[in-house]
Length: 312
Image (cartoon, rainbow, N blue to C red; front, top):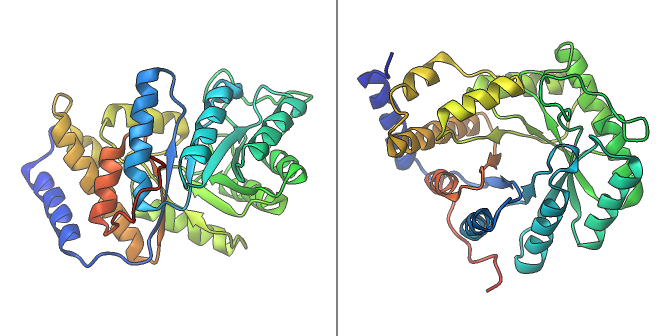
């Protein structure tokens, strides 16, 4: 079933409504990038950083591959951000397929490079999402243990992940929140959510977290979806739900990239606006190393460049 004319008109109306609103005040944003594999991808990444840097993000994070597969590329990327921009980089770090000694070396390397913010994650099993996680006997056994190790080695700010729809490995919401509490007790001061597509997912999660005594900022992770099929596959692996109305809305657009971009930007803007109406003023964007959609979304939300943050 293709998206109906009324659905497309509703999307267009939402975008027009966003444009005509007063700019949102006091918004804080952060951006996530992943380390490039090729010279061409390096150019794309740096173009994205240069384009988004003037929006003055609170920080920009760089992901870390399973088992340290991107260790050097992650380190090189965050080091370049430190050396060539005024941005505050946050380096991802996982405890999969590495010993404590190896991970501690990475932590020390980050500190020596001037990186003061780490996003601490357990990481996906080496065999892929859906497989049982088995920590190395000589490694950190959980993200909470990893955070304890990070804090012992330096005065790092530590952010962690949280899951509005429950981590795939958790037995239920209570166990999931207990794990988040352990990460906070170990020293985490910010939680960033897995991506979601309906505001109720985030708002209900925050309500449960606050009722459980969790008080740190819980920043919604926003993923603009221009490649819907890819996003749906990613959501399936990550345990995130995709509402049927999104399948309907993107149906028939496989060969129409421009329309997909318009739909993606309007959906992300509307999600942010609905969250903002409930008092949310911080957003973390999963950029997929693409600046165009994220920059447009931030522009519509009222954010304007404050000057270059990249050394030229």
